[in-house]
Image (cartoon, rainbow, N blue to C red; front, top):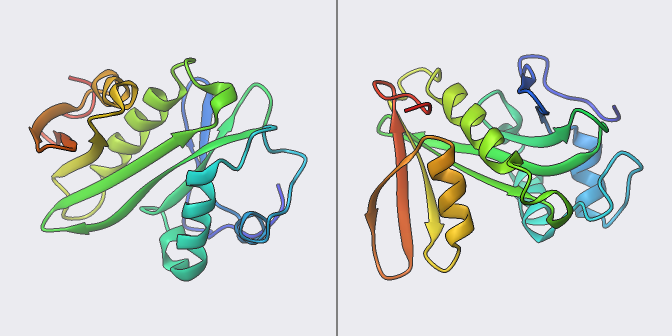
Length: 170
């Protein structure tokens, strides 16, 4: 696959997906509006462009506990992104997105479960969380299927968590 990837960032492999660090050449391609042949026809989605811009501004987010692409193992196509954001007080946040052509296949839950389990291996991390807009019930179901529990909400968002004691496979 094109571009360089940090050597200390191993791929995370699930039954149907590979979560790999974004190659720097692909960050540049997304930021520059390019297209690569191993991307799903609807990649990058808007969220992927936002994450690529974030990575371009913060290259340290390509480490093991940073941002990753979601690759469909059966086709080798990039179908989304999942990533961790810097931890604070033993808690680490993650976010995810799957392109529309691959939604409804369980990929988001599979990627969320894998990244949450991996995040709990980070030094000093005891809790993993994700926030979801209440107007997006499908994303809330993704987190529940990934083993996270809703712990709070306000008028617009809900917070889901898992911790080292529970793990993401409750």
